[in-house]
Length: 102
Image 1 (cartoon, rainbow, N blue to C red):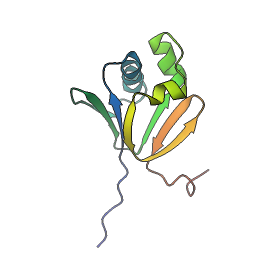
Image 2 (cartoon, rainbow, N blue to C red):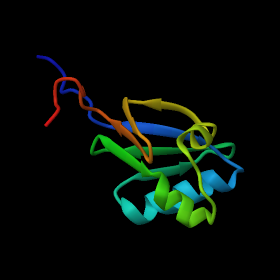
Image 3 (cartoon, rainbow, N blue to C red):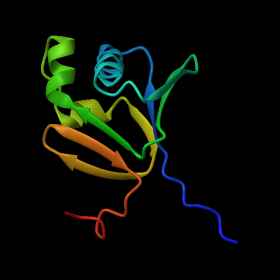
Image 4 (cartoon, rainbow, N blue to C red):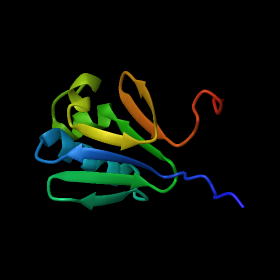
């Protein structure tokens, strides 16, 4: 009997930056199903649904100044899942993106 495939994905964000706090605030508002855990020096954000989407335009609005992808990636420590990046969006998914495209 084979085990069911995992669908959860996780992000690790470093604490202590305004960008990280703005990201957390936006993710809490946009996706209340995320599990956010405070580990003192970092935040772990997990999606049991297999998708975390960070809208950098929303993060910039929350922060009060523009944040581009290169700036935002500085606070990203690690992740578990597959990444899709767009100019203003970081998407972490459990899908095999080359196979599951619409």
